[in-house]
Image 1 (cartoon, rainbow, N blue to C red):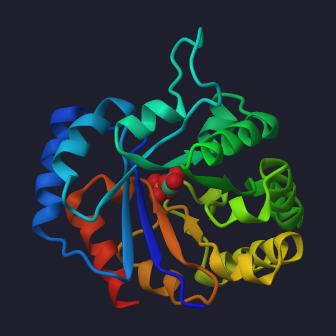
Image 2 (spheres, rainbow, N blue to C red):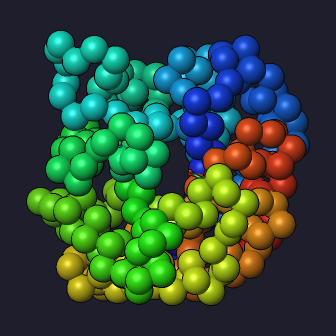
Length: 254
Ligand code: PGA
């Protein structure tokens, strides 16, 4: 089955609304909508509204960098699914390694967020990945599968089609050290196998699995050549409209 590629730019804690505006103007100049690649921008919450205004009528899609699973209430600093949707978001990152490591998010919280997103028609991008120590000890598969099992606990097959999975080896995030295309493919293949085993072949053939971790315009093509890698979650290289546009163009050719 032909899966549409997805390239998502995770800006993390970068860009004010004004900087968001400058990026979008510049990016849109060098980008042409096409059916092959879906482009998703994940600005900080404060940039979403401005981004939405500028992206209306284009095929660029917005996502939140995270969400909270409750609908509303006394949860200072948090953002609900409904708030994201009201800002035009169709996607949200969940379980990013920085959230897990710096903000102590555990699998239970990740699971609640995934289920809250799915309950309100927001596509979660579930991030999983091993740390260097786990890779060295041959524990990569075990770690990734345990994060998947826990993160997707209670998610039904029908809902699963709305989930995007991002394999992001933690040692490759922001380090300039990319997993080789072969290393990335190996783990993404295992992830797809797990989805097939858990949800059936149809679902596993339908869902998109991304790679993330020091993606650049230069390594895009070799990563996307891999059979099971359907797209990229880009951090640092998504901050410049030029390099992000080059990544998207390379993905279009793939
Ligand atoms: P990076 O970040 O591309 O800067 O390594 C990727 C991510 O954290 O999603």
